[in-house]
Length: 287
View (cartoon, rainbow, N blue to C red):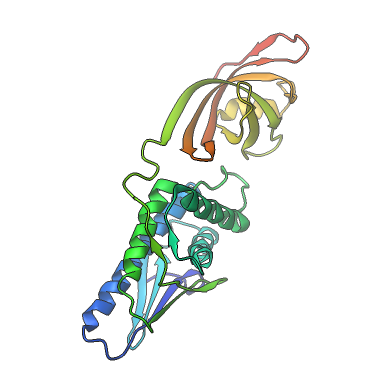
């Protein structure tokens, strides 16, 4: 298969040689491969490559089972593939020494760590910050936990990428209520919003840091109106100060948890008006 070995994800399963049901070993490995396929798709989506990730099985070695998984060539850059594989290993680093994952807060912590791992390699030069969907991460965790059920005492698994390696904590389990977790806690908003711009971007298409006027909630948002952004960055529109009030058409996801509300995946679809500080008049801009 045409997959570069420099960016493969490798799973090694050292099983007991005298197992009474050898077929169960392959069934367990199949569950891990399914879990990592779902994790790969989730991480690809987190960096803006939804439906562009496909795992390919590269090789299987007998004795101890070694499986190599690679992303299909031509769909993702090697840089993105490497970030996804390293982050997949990072998930198991985060689960080392952990007995169980049971709460939404536990899942959100894992999601945030995955986002940080992706950002450390890819950065945010032209996209929104990586966003890992916690609801979908729950499904991945449930799959990996189910795979752990098939591992016997004395058997070990290791997952590795080009940069990272981790022994899988086969004692870890996902014990939360997957059906109810984040149920009804993720909603989508699209409409007008008054914001202040904490940090505009004067070059490139990185996300702006903005704060809502109503409740002073800060979040990153990418400007989608390329024509308006070009005019702003070429100073055809006067610079926006931190005290100016911008009325914009926005779209974002709302995540609710016990710790509060978080805005993610925010986009500024269009700037409607800018109320300049100290009584400046509104400036209106067309699409």
